Length: 384
Image 1 (cartoon, rainbow, N blue to C red):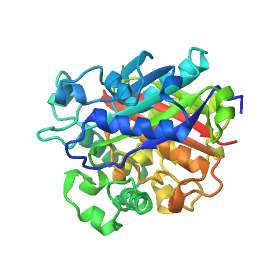
Image 2: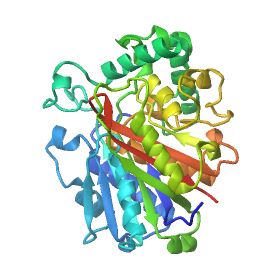
Image 3: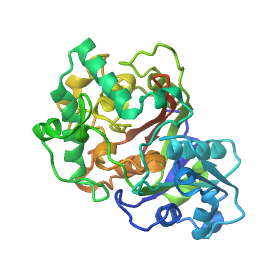
């Protein structure tokens, strides 16, 4: 690997779930405070801040939320950037913070994100009603239901293989006190749960969640002084190709983002020890296995069926419980994933610890357009 240009030295998050009357500001401020405490960094040392959120403007009419969040933890005067980039809002905040440090424009950056989704009359999270496809019903569950059926037809994957993704991730969530759903489930229970978008049942679709997470990034020099640092070997952000007609069984944009990240980090998929990837639906995780190079095209179902992506397997994926069981506080999920990989590489993940984990990958994607994703991030972190 080349010399890392930035590191994560602190992380904090709150449990995913229902948080009653708590606001997006309150939740993010707590996560930011925990990250600063974890890093041993004082508010006055922070040079810049980035805040990720998707829904607050639509639900609450709020804007420039980040300034309020960081003021709550004693940060003012420092530049604040508010980020909305669908499900990658939090991971885009990390990407921007990394680039600011790598460019020599800051020594310490605080990235935080939060989302409030348990709100009455929220409605379906979609790409927006100015999109013709949305008006015609092509919302996320429908899109991925179509992908699942096409994938099953083309490669012979089974409903059981899809269901096993949900079972695996729930088995991991049992060991995560910050996960929303922690009770074990069976393949039979997954398949018998109410149908959402054939063949995807309710237990194959990620739940909504309130939640927040934050990370403190800094320069390599400061990371040496603070200790417990996790290097950011690469972080990339790409947008989709929007080719029409799309290939519903391949995530080409994810493949491209992963390739760029591997190239920048100087590693390949075989060097990874632990992964957090976007699993909004069971088929999503399977398609991401293939796009990120964990197996050949059409073999993702076999990968999960053979147990190679569960805790104790060759490459554990979503040991936090993933979006499917930990929950998906949309704008915050990218930083929630990053916090999990930091905990894993530090050896602080408790009963869900991947033994010997030194290199981890964080993947997130969001926003559907013409059968492609609008944004995709991939970050590679190491403790070497």
